[in-house]
Image 1 (tube, rainbow, N blue to C red):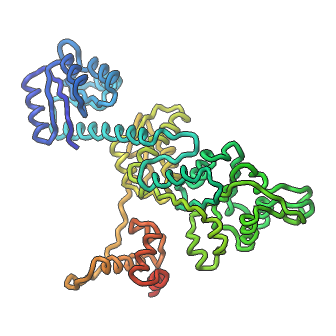
Image 2: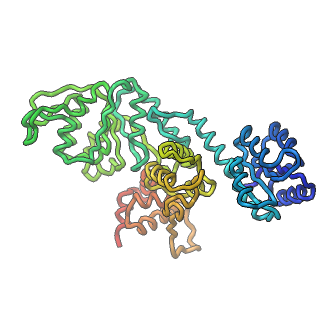
Length: 463
């Protein structure tokens, strides 16, 4: 990654040698002979990195480094010296130098250091830009990111925050569905009321029914006193039904009636109780498919999905990975009291390349682990989990393709999708992940090619 480099070197021959060498490697070097002149140039111009000699008449390289760090902390400083002792290196780093290289200068080694420094500056600038664009949304439950898909979700959350219509939030596990639900609550007119959450997959059916609707005294063996359900407890606020796709079929009619009539009947009770709460539901399941397979009531699905908000997977959010990573670094560094301020360029590249099947939750766990293990002020590749360090993009390549057969791109795509489905045993979720599309996109492509996406997926399972 070539960039604009300010060279500070008092020896003319060395200055010219380095300047010409960097020019040949694609950099844009500007050479000066003294620290004072360097400070003047930095105040008037922008540079990606400063390369300075350590021993110079007047202000030396360490003093210059300290001045740059104080006045332009965004510009990395690389110190060059013939005195390559450990003490000198430590002094340079303590002065705020990004890196340290010794004479005689190996041009290849220097280019590598400068490329890392330029990339480091670019990454930090990108994080700052993303933060500014995001408007530093913090504690109101906002999601962190700037990708188009996430911006679309932001916009929809803002538009419907004050509307009491039921909302269904969909997305893979770990994409931040509860965070989005809390954002809806925090930005809406019910924000002063309670936010009540329940995971519909986390408890047995009888207990779940009692939690949601309440129960009367004596309704079952352990019901020694009446209990108010969460629908009523959420009065004036929001009831969040997480993993609603796991709701047992036997409870779905009761939930449907509650949503339609805005009343609930406690288990074992004779009297219906009205409630006044906004309902937000979330699922990582494909409820349309569950309806087709008779695992979820169609009328309940449409009652829940009055307004749908789909959260994109992290792998589809580009540089959001870096913004989230920086946020988590700061969060966990603060908790642990460690001085860790960001990512090395190499670590950032690995994080961007990884597929994140566990989405934001997996990234958060990854950064928490890395901060706990690191011995440096920046997270390195070695601090990352092995699966992230060694990740390579999965590829499935059709075999025995007849090069003489002329077909349309659409037909070629259809055949490729079928080969991927065959390779993964018909799993549409895994096929979509390998192809780099969401499941809805995969279904549309299958339906366009076959007339029936379900038949295509079924056919893929046949030997």
